[in-house]
Length: 454
Image 1 (cartoon, rainbow, N blue to C red):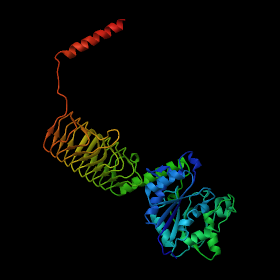
Image 2: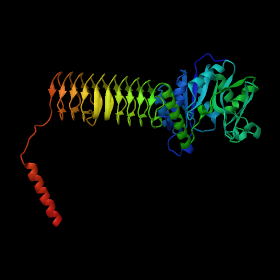
Image 3: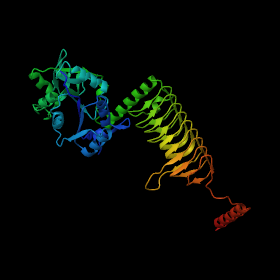
Image 4: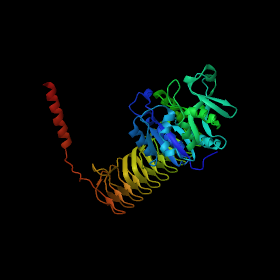
């Protein structure tokens, strides 16, 4: 029964989220380093949809900006009046109303629905006109809509507010996620009314409408945790705890060693290769890949970076977006690296800032080195060749290049290119005045004594 076209996606992201007590739209609150909306979009993107539509409402401009940050090709539509889920989906009718492939409706505040579950829903469409994602609740008083079934057939969905005691006793609940052929879905939506306790247009009503037409619906089941919706700060915290617990368990299962897993925090897209060791109190921001056999030492923060096999990072290191560490690189304590490529076997071990730079293979960068990359308006690049030795407390004033095998003297300010194999010194000549320190301090102590007596 599946349509002939590709998959279409509608993500509902119009809610205000008043229980968040926030000026920020609910779907933009972050879970595991990314807006809730991005989690839903990521699951949908795994299906390679022909078109993805995000329905905005409160904070439409911010939500649209966030959606396009994840996928520049996404289309957004605005729901000016929030009259229910059916009304929200109808906002996408002009874009998907004639779509002859399957359309899946997702929610921007439900981050854990997996692409594998969505694939199962698409497969179920081979035998049903409408597929609904359901779950067995552990709480008989949970205020979810109930799925009324007869065998494999879904007969209707009853919202909690409209359900009698017998219907509320049903444990099979509605997640809200729906899959149907596009033209059929939007045809059904046109018949949805608002004769219910909330006077809203419910997406769930399409099941009864389809049944009256002789069409059939079915349920694909998933774990309740997968359907967790976020409506408050407490629920957001619970989701973060659940995500981190699962991410840590997955990392251990995949061959990553952690000495104190509860102190390690992952983002939604963190990748760690096997036989890597992660020490306590490490935070992974978005966009981090760590290859096999690396070691991330305690109290380090990584974001938007790539760490190759055998590299050592930290302790107390910070890798910012664009940091690329080749194999066997050593980055030590209180080192910050941003938008820089560090070659194989290079060492940057102490108290150093490397930004907008390229460091060659086996080069040693001494303590206190700074690539002075910013002139107040523009960023400039520093290039250091292979096997160079950058003396401690060197200031590299970009744009500047240090050649292969060159040396900079400790305490130098390097403002011009250094030829391969050369020694560059850029510091003032030392001058010494014999006995000055003794006389100077004697004078100061006498002045202090006179002041105290006064």
